[in-house]
Length: 94
Length: 414
Image (cartoon, rainbow over all chains, first blue to last red; front, side):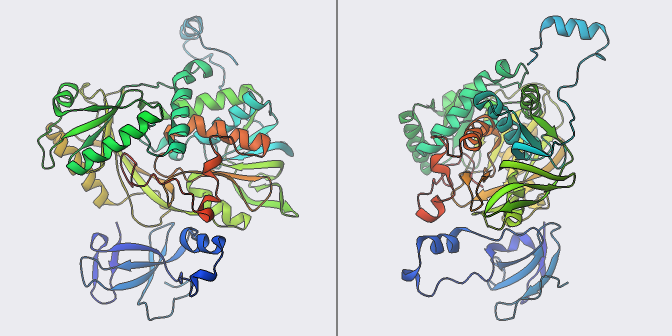
């Protein structure tokens, strides 16, 4: 189980948080212009990285605010925590 | 292929069991094969076996990074059932049960397939509606299933507490479902494939693919380059990593799912019991151990270990239904990495690279499908076109929108 440092609260058990998938996937601004391939890619295809992975979390049972983690999916080690308004750190951070 | 017999047992037994032949060879990789299968788990080995037996393709290698059946084949709770909601799933998984039914005899190797029945509990009116809808859909697909009322359940599972916090109101029972011996499945298929001339090469990790003009020509491995006209990957959670090597993405993500085994106790549970509502799946092995699984961790991870909170939830569910087990000790705990798709259905498909095929996305429920998965993937590798049963499971469904949604209909959802 992860211990996550919420950028607005402090260190809490992962059970207080909910996971919301890979970060920085923008919804297409003009969905009607997209092909089925582009729309399917946006909905279902993910990097599924083995290594540093940028992902969205919500402090669901806490402050209910969103933030991002850079986490190594091979080891579980959290490399960086950053708010949605902060630029994503390099994959080598931590 | 040599079939074991009573005479064998007697002869080798009298010789102190030191004279049994090796079950498969340990060959050096050849420079080139007709088909290279990446992944020496149940699915990869079954694919090799059916390639040789059904299609006469024998110049085949199975490359395994570690040892045979050491990944998810050894890490699941060995439950076998085919009570799926959607037509393509019912067809594929029920074909698998039919192969399981004849597998020990066919392979000459006891896979210990025990059709003890799978009982899926309903704890609310909604659950009852769900099992009735699914049960009727299953009936229409010619798959066996029957409804049980609480009195019937009490007779079949006298040790279970039906009057728990969310009382058991009914159940769906698939009599042909059950469990099998996980190692034996991998070993039986390996032995069968080897007897047909397939080279099984362990401790050989694939590091990349070599392509020419968008067509795969072989794999780079820790034991050098191995040429291949066709490459098939059956590598479960490593699918994403291999796809990245080949230059494309897959519509799946990897999460760990854990399971436990208790100390052995006397036989008291002669069915597989599953509950979606309180999230439990448990059976008792031939040795008397309870084999049970937890939930998958909700985030991407290749760590091959699960979270403690999932352990607590699983044990809580077990004790709700079986309070008498409160002093039972667990002996082992582990996790397997599951390649989970959005619709919780597998991908048996060609890829953007010609002659490179993937069989993946079995997620948390691939063990039951081992024989069918190998059978249809072998067809795909031998002919270059999908087997009729595998046609709906192509990767293009994530672009066309023809998903096979088993997310809500899994007997235990992950």
